[in-house]
Image 1 (cartoon, rainbow, N blue to C red):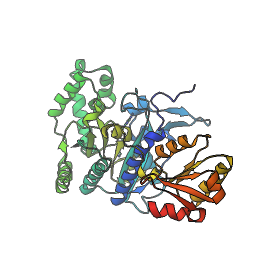
Image 2 (image 1 turned 90 degrees about the vertical axis):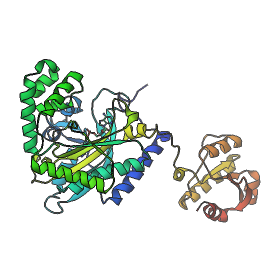
Image 3 (image 1 turned 135 degrees about the horizontal axis):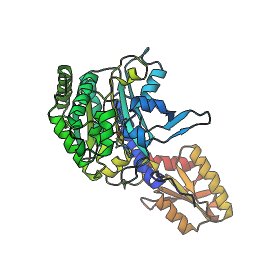
Image 4 (image 1 turned 90 degrees about the horizontal axis):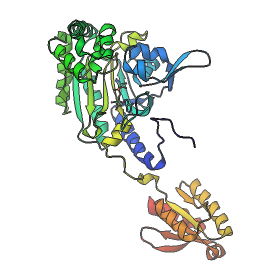
Length: 419
Ligand code: HAM
């Protein structure tokens, strides 16, 4: 029997209810904050991710699903949403028309990581990108927006940590200082990090190995990280967060595993996630649009991992949304009644009544059980007697009251009670 690929999962109807809740809560909040939806393709040119995320990052070197298409072009499945949105922003010409854009997205991303709880090969992100301003209030806004979405999805006890990586100049200085310091401590570093200090020293900060981490933290403490402008910007971001009462802690070791970041960066973690504790993350990327061939345009954004949000929300046992429940279930006895039932079910649907009937030849008792399982408020019973009288029996599953109803009155009777 065919199986889903490793690290990829079906979302079956029982689970979909929770996904729908997260999506609709997030959409509502995005709209409140003035963000508009953008949808970009799953496939992009591989070069887009190499240029933006960085050629030496784990995502690009080890985790992308990349292949050559029939025209021998290098294609990748998107591992994240920021680079495709920056591309789409330029391709739509927003930089010439409406430079300031607040965009959001919800959709699947792909990374060939080793699957474990909260780490999938196809996962889903809810994210936002605010492009066109370097204002510190915008950094605070995206962090507040991320927190509001977590609140709106019923997730508690999350922790936001913020840091500033500084501008491109600061990053260069930090990179050189790390290289100088760590070159003298190579024995402490893993093989990957030995290469990283040669090609992209900042990437040693992503290493999870204890000895590398200790070496990096030691080096870090000795380095003055930020220029005056970046200190001022970061202070202003924090002051704004204080003003609007968003809780956070400052953590100078947040570096992020993608090269495009500059300035404010942040992560949100949750205790239910264990080793994979990042619920979401984001930050500024003031050089990305330019690096992709556009003008100098500042931007910031974040993405939350939906699978991890589900874990943080307690596993997603929230049941069916009330609005997905049936208003009516048609239970019939005999061939003629089933035929009339089919007619009624279709007429009710035309009137916008959510309803269904049996297609498996079940007994009346089994049909009543189905109605109950589907949360139907009414059961419309049709047997020989009802056919003869040109009526139906309408059972209210809440009050258990049962009445005979003429067909022309049926819709009014049902909608009158449920609306
Ligand atoms: P990221 O930190 O790579 O950032 O991913 C953001 C979130 O996606 C993670 O915190 C995690 O919840 C989720 N995630 C990542 N990989 C996986 C996986 N294999 N399985 C399950 N969940 C995963 C970005 O993607 C940036 N584009 C965020 C951003 C937007 N920065 C600025 N704007």
